[in-house]
Length: 173
Length: 178
Image (cartoon, rainbow over all chains, first blue to last red; front, side):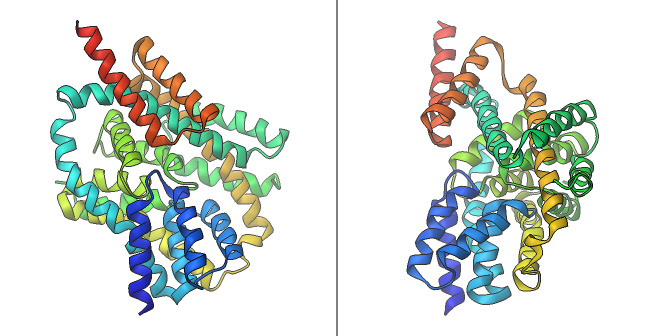
């Protein structure tokens, strides 16, 4: 029963991949050895598609991998499998996080963590920048884009993303 | 209690316009969750991110589940999670099924190249905005700089960085109190 196997394999990935979408890659690599759902070459294509299409990268890879293995239902089931551990675990801990967020030890811990999370986000931005800035031209556009985005920060990010798509086509990036 | 439909639709939009994962989602989350709907504060969002980094699963999903649970209990959590993955399921299935050559199209490639630049600008702008909320005093700046150094020069995993920061925060506040 391929659907059950798909669900179970992606459920395990959702449970074991701590730290975000790209952490799922080594687990997907293992799948190419275990099953004939997709090849290593297809996995490389999957990563490229997942990174440039909308949606969290990990989710995109699960849908793409599941689809390659068993069609539309395969994509759906793999995605549900991936998401389910998060859903269960976060629901279980949410109650306590919201209760103790502003108390004692927990508050002191978060005091140290917040600047660290900002560093993590900036670092993720740097990784994205490495992919986005391919030459001097794109880097200069990036600086200009930051100035504009930051000046008009009350505008919805969707507006800027759509402008970015149009700009890409007009400037033939 | 917020309308369930509103929760689902908000996260559907966020999923649809997130290009690149957890960090790329942050500017959209701030606009929709903090500024527009006021479902959480910037500080809470940062906390959800840090917990989402250390718990299993994809950060984007973990953060969506947190906000959903806060606003609408278990059903809220399920709906925000479904909302954020739904665009992926639809778009990726379409690409895999009928648009095999979609990613090789010149215009698509150019559009994505443009979007990637804007996403970097948006993430950077979000970091600047969150700086006021998350980094306090010399100690905050120290943790920020040290974390960045650990990530860049020592390739430390995000979980390790968060663990080190939490222990430092705890120790610092203990010492300060004495």
